[in-house]
Image 1 (cartoon, one colour):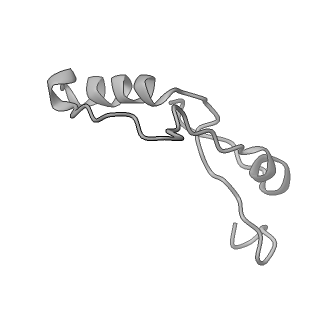
Image 2: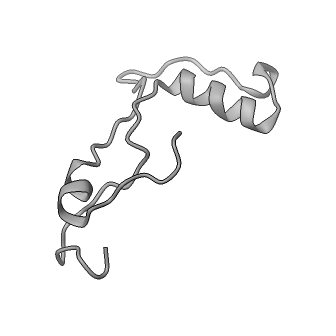
Image 3: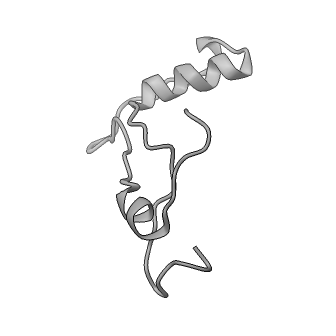
Length: 71
């Protein structure tokens, strides 16, 4: 980004994979060798996000970014 990015621009860097919060948690727990007993369940809040998906298209197009490791 320092070499090819435009000053003042925002570039989202990520894996290019959309996952729900629950699916992401499953993957992280598996990687850590943990189970659902490690998860603290809390009530949903108004406007709760069930997934976060930032587009990497701008970083791909302008910076030639490509994820190196698949999620």
